[in-house]
View 1: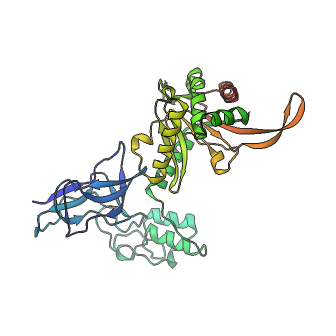
View 2: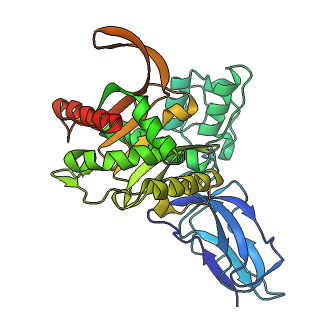
Amino acid sequence: MATEFHLPDIGEGLAEATIVHWYVEVGERVETDAPLVEIETDKAVVEVPAPVAGVVLHHGAAVDEVLEVEALLAVIGDEGESWAPSSSPEPAATATTSDEAAPIVGTLDSSDAPTVASGVQALPMVRKLAAELGVDLTSVAGSGPGGRVTEADVRSAAEATTGPHTRVPLSATRKAIVANLSRSWTEIPHVTTYSEVDASALLAARADAGKPPLEAILMHRLVPVLKEFPGFNASFAGDAVLQHERWDLGFAVDTPDGLMVAVVRDVDQKSVAQLGDEIRELADGAKSRSLTRAELTGQTFTISNIGAVGGRYGTPIIPYGTSAILSVGRAEPQAVVRDGEITIATEFPLSLSYDHRIIDGGTGRAFMAAVVAAFSS
């Protein structure tokens, strides 16, 4: 008897996943728990095993297509068995780019399709998009039912007028980055403040510790400051502020698939050496896309070492669900004034963004002063 296998929610909050690779083609046999398909979620690339043994009778989506959670992923049955979809509708695989080829309800024919004065068949939203993009609908060949002009037709026509270019569809990871950053920037009133700190103490401490990742030294010295200023280790909850009594610090990792934040748990209970080892492992996992969702979510404060990629000052965006992020830039020799004299010193530039709903400007400057003091000792 055929077993219908639906896309499981492999991580809290997963809504959809992109098919990366089918390990077993239709007509081939698979064993229980053997790799069936590789999918990409918003955070990781994951192998999904077969729930039963048998012959693969059906793929629910092709490579590069997107499936919603609980949509039919595959059908596995016996040798020689046939399978046909039931009459009840399945959540459909959606193309990686919007094609709007099918109408929302039923089928539109030329008699009931929305038109413009010229006789072009197009939905109101498509006509609006054409106006926004400066596309003449009378010059667009419609690919929809009855020759209807779709959103994809309009976008293709708009792109054709911009000259040579390459269209790069967003990966699931990039879509998640876009959504998360847009939500943070839209909902959180950001304030960014700046300072500098003499690099000698941090660099000496790093050398004494055997040169662990700089983030290990930063995290170790930040925890006491976060305990002194609990608003920076907090979340906004509408009518309240949640001050966390755990110190799970995230750090930004530059990967080929985009910026990711890996999370070190219980930083207050770990030595610099332990932090360094864990940071290396998490950074490697982020770059290889092997981290679990738990290792990529739930931070209470974030550090972004933009100096590692040559950056100095920045305006870091606060990860949603937290109240602040500290960016540490590249340490370079600078002309500075010390004791009334101009001298050359190597300083780390610091950029601190915080949620103004939780933290006032005075508290923000006090926190930054405490960070500078902690990093200077």
